[in-house]
Image (cartoon, rainbow, N blue to C red; front, side, top):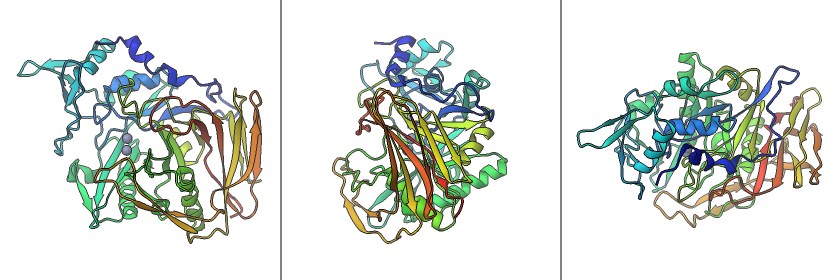
Length: 478
Ligand SMILES: [Zn+2]
Ligand SMILES: [Zn+2]
């Protein structure tokens, strides 16, 4: 059975019912406005289950201003990339990957998806192959940009999710997933080593730093501003501890929220309060002590499924970033993000965020909601101890495959990630709250929460909590 374009669009409508507190709209006094975007989603160019037009249309039609299609180990610029249409719509084939350097992640697409695609986009390019089967051509980044970009309304950014495994002598395997934005090419080391390359026995910190350096070098050679982002660091099978990201000044961004989730499903997390907020504070406390720049947290969907297919995880519309920039272009958006002038949202958006560096004061305005809303100001204290106060061994309980292993998590003292002020607004009350840093605060950030129904029913949404995060602001007196 096929569904119409209306049906395709309707499938996601429930995920966008925000309360109208969106900061976008009229430019503020500084001539800047808030732009909403998602920098992590997938299409048939890799393991996402949508043609690229469908993915872009989903976001643009819901008011997103920028988007990066971050397919695994490929930049969507091959000019002659075809997928075979298979099946009759009753069964979904598993994605295949033949491991060649020429990327062939998912060479077949189920007929059900194709049927929806050609109804929504009748100019889809198709052909018959020698066996009489249908093939469809995947549109490229350039074609998608030409089709969807509109001044001050929508911008597609080049994006790739660099994806690598490292095997260790003890049998353990880790994966690192990293997005690089606004560099329209695959990294030279990936072209050289092929899609499926597995590294051996490289410490994760070195491997991450090598990626950061390669991305920075390519960006420099192209003379283009860029972002380099560590994705879902503490997912069960992508386990990267905060210690791994300390000595890495080129890494400025990580996903504090991936598809609305701060942590992996199952696997005993969060353990002793360990989630991406904790990860963030540990990383930044250590980094500031070493004079390294703060790590900023972004929110993304990591969309793989767009229609509520069985499994129903990694759906669109869960987490996004609002960037305060002068105009909707790559240079302005990236400059604003590198300056930390953005907020990260999962179902909740603040009204305004302001930091006064001369006073060391962070101020947050939150509109009234139908439920209680809470603002927590969080700091790390200058005299924290780098020695863990405890270690916790986490054993996976529901991902019993060969890539999942127990791991040890360090728990640090309460001076890292300390909540120093909490302001609660009852339903119908707006909040305007501020915190002025004390001399022994390394930085301050705010986390805004509202108990609520997840925007989608993905299995990665265990909390029923909407959250917005400001970025951390360094204490200017340090
Ligand atoms: Zn990933
Ligand atoms: Zn991804």
